[in-house]
Amino acid sequence: MIRPKLSLRRSAAVLGAAFLGLGAAVAIAAPASAHHPEIYGSFCKVQGSNNYEFQWTVGNSENIKAEVIRVEPGAVGEIQVGAEMNPKGGAPLTGTETRTAPSKGQLDKSLLVEAKWKRPDRVVKEFRKVEAKDKGKCATPPTTPPTTPEPTPPVTPTPEPTPPATPTPEPTPPATPTPEPTPSTTPEPVEPVGTYESTCDELIITLENTTDAEISVVLTPNEGEAKTLTVAPGKTGSVSFPAKEGLTVTPSGEGLEGEPIGYEQPEECGGGGGGDLPLTGAAAGGIAGGAVLLLAAGVVLYIVARRRRVTFTA
Image 1 (tube, one colour):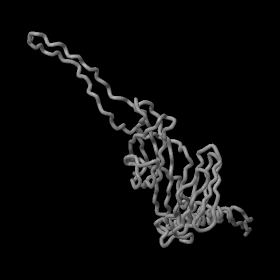
Image 2: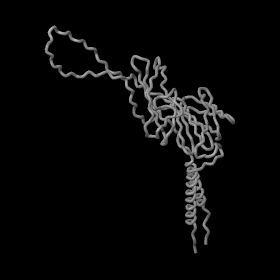
Image 3: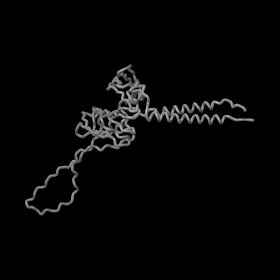
Image 4: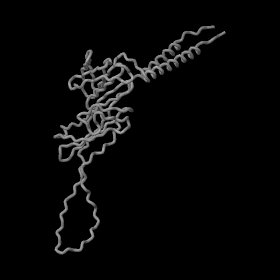
């Protein structure tokens, strides 16, 4: 019997299966793309006044429900704190309002909406601020010219039949604008986008810089050392803090001051908040099961590769 030469294919098969299993586990555990409220707006100028009529719609980027937790400068119709956002594809929240400004240049055309999504293994909060699209002048109701009555003749004539006339359209009061169909793409935010993600292990704060200048913000937790997040124009950056019950992080910086960001423990973590909490439930079971199946497949590939390399001669 001649022993086969040592081949790297055997080791490669095992290593390949191991990496495959590990990669699958990471992919299953990785967070999804950024959640965000989809904000659309338009406005028109009311002729002869300093009033501008706005109409807004707010949709949902995700296939689960979300809750509105902040609206600035204020609530607009259905768009208010506590409102429930339907899953993606469902009816959006709508609202109309009138804003007054001496000129269009001094008009605040923006709306900020922050929403919260609760998944079993994480809680995601994100805010966006967009500007409404200028639609020009608002449509005005038609006006009917006044009619002058004819003088009454001295003798009452026999009334002649009145020929049918085209009815004069009656003035219609200004109506609430009908919301326009939702565009296929979300308008670009006019200010940096902040996303806060609470997992079982950490609070992750992400900043998307939509401006043309570098942004630097200091994030100070109520316990521990502060961290500085610097993001170049058009880039996205993030920092994280170990999860702990009662954790809050306060942002500060030029034009970036805001309310403290609080950690919110996901449902699947169990017990009190903390970075040492294991992932339990369906998510953990799915990750473990997938990894085991892929590692088993790797073992089979190894055995097959080994048998094909062994030959016997007389």
